[in-house]
Image (cartoon, rainbow, N blue to C red; front, top):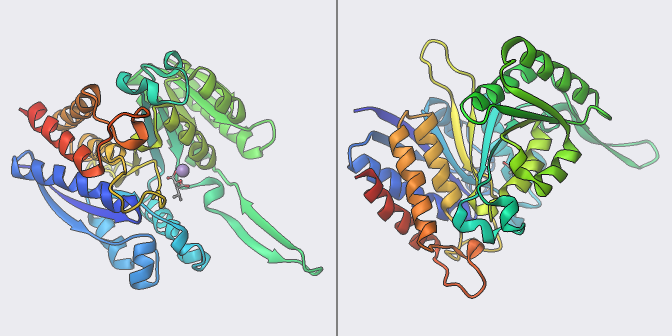
Length: 370
Ligand code: IPM
Ligand code: MN
């Protein structure tokens, strides 16, 4: 039987609660003999800062580097608003992404028919939506240097962030998008701001060349990122795969998430380059939502994005496509039978808590796995 090293990093706020539901599913897979999971758990974000004074320890990084996959909950919260910038909770996540080389972030936005009415958009706009945002995750303005706030001679301050992209960084993320499109609707939309940013000009040039040389069979469209934001709320179903830089991907994937009914629905996979010798990739899976301090600890959080992230791990890191399909089916079945957490419930409708929703998925998962 295949066996895998799995690192769980629940983090802060609702990260802890939603990870609890994933742990139940992992134990079930292990008990059923679908695969053996050696599970380790560690701290990240504010929780790591409170315990160790850093957003992630070197020891946890070492475990992450040795894992077949990392499952990540969420980090941050008002409690850590005043900690030194380099130790803020988000720094733990950024270090994981950078040190594991997780340059490709896949954020699928699927609107389950049962949830079309939970979206803030009209049913006909979002029903049946199935798009993937491919976000570049280790470059751009998140990491470019200089990145600083300096005090000028007259006492004013000046803040600088630097947007940087090199040809190979754009080539490799473009290839991820084109490869993915070939397995889906065969369409890629590439978003940038070439009308004001030099990095946008290069992005456009490189994507155009990679397309022409390697993927001429895929339909490619270039769109300005601001226009893309508008198109995503006007007619999101025109898209299949979208590819964009780190910052635009962060912003536009929150829009995409809300199209599906709730930010609590969107899973994501962050993948590194394939190791040619082993065929494996470093990988981290996380919900797109954050730590939601306002509802943390109340048992109200929707665990479906975290559970969906486990589904992506089963598919992309463990080669357990059948189990991943069964998990997707289980989520759809729970939703179809009216199971709703508070964020996706209609006004007046009875809502399930985090644990009840996790149990409902587990029950359907047992059925679907047969
Ligand atoms: C996300 C989050 C992160 C990001 C934060 C927590 C650093 O918003 O994954 O979208 O900005 O990338
Ligand atoms: Mn974000």
